[in-house]
Image (tube, rainbow, N blue to C red):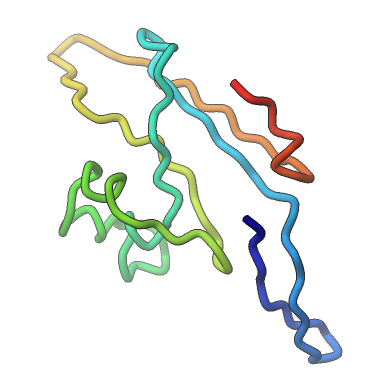
Length: 114
């Protein structure tokens, strides 16, 4: 599927542009490298109405599980990429390592299949 966005040029003329290029993200917990973590890319789901992006107000009203299961919107706005680690219990003195790779591609076809 193609994504379209409205862009305004300095000459103040609106045009529809087909967006082919974009960013990608993949993330996993190092002890479970066979399973990629779901990505929360809708900034408003995490931060809610906090446009400064300093307080995760969206997480005060819902859970990460609900965000991952629900619809997210990333078109025509600045998106984000948060790895959603679910069902993880970290006991005192323990730690986990989440590894995340970010990238950019000119086309979805340029992103290797993993």
